[in-house]
Length: 303
Image (cartoon, rainbow, N blue to C red):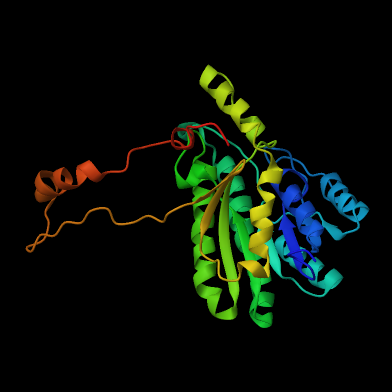
């Protein structure tokens, strides 16, 4: 028996990339799977029913059970339909994996309102909508698991991704709140920051030698390397794992820390702008976080 035998898992964005890898592996581990994918392009444009149905066919050909859902999770009704399809076809819902998304990068002063809103709507609002729909079932049955995909662009930083970074750091806040609010009902919520070559990563510019080296390094990291941790987190074996932020890069797995207090200062008669300038900032400055980008932190080759 697989780790997900008897479980029903709904996966948003399962038509390609990481979501597809998770769907195929979840089915191989015994889950019945709802394969959700709106079928948009890498920049969020258009729609295509093909990817979701292709993954369903692949799962069925291997002897598994799956149904396709082509709704957009950027709308509450679409996200709710993913959970409804799980219950209608398989009688229950045990886990939700939020891997849907796209990129629309631009340096901040060139970021359009539409690029901001569209990315937030799918990555962050979509994660809320589908989680809210599943949460009611999880509460009633006294069990359930959420697996959200975040990014080091939000956890650490990156150029030209203010929309994506804000959404992905927001996903961590959402996951933490879910873990806290629903722990009493036996529900878990965790996040994964993946490093994987996909059609989204393929949109990264390669105008400089450093960018070309980075992209070639990322091609070594396949979506299939991400799936084992995501599938495990959906299983009962992970019943004591909640509120965590993991990272996966090829064969490496990371556990990220939360923001922590580094220094503190106290002044018995309170602070003024001048004492902040004269005393507080000089005291704290040596402990300031430097501005860094994800490639600067993960500067060694994937292992």
